[in-house]
Length: 130
Image 1 (cartoon, rainbow, N blue to C red):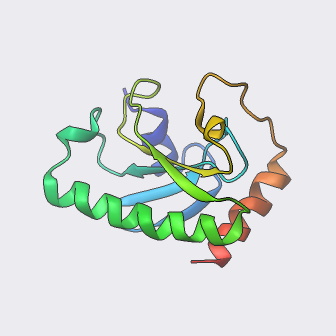
Image 2 (image 1 turned 45 degrees about the horizontal axis):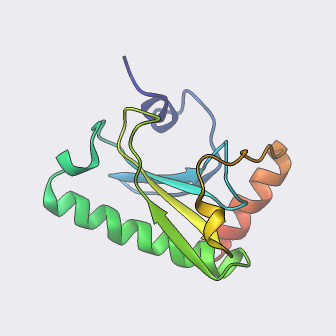
């Protein structure tokens, strides 16, 4: 069964896309910790990030860096944090989270509930900085 991320990649489920190429996609997390919380996902369905071949994993980090720089330029924050949890969806992904304080990266905190229009505004602000 395809993961929810594979279904997003296939266009079966809508997303607030930030950047996409032939191997990776970045889109806003629908359950963000903070505004601008973005996921970077490989298009090949791999459950565990450390099962991704070295070259592809390096390229995924370079792709993530480009997205993180755009987030940093678009969203007021001290820096963009990086997290790999890997338990919530069986498809490898990187969380890019705008941080103003360490607690912004607390995955136990209540997630934001943002309107579709606001999510699209945030995505557009980030895309504009790419």
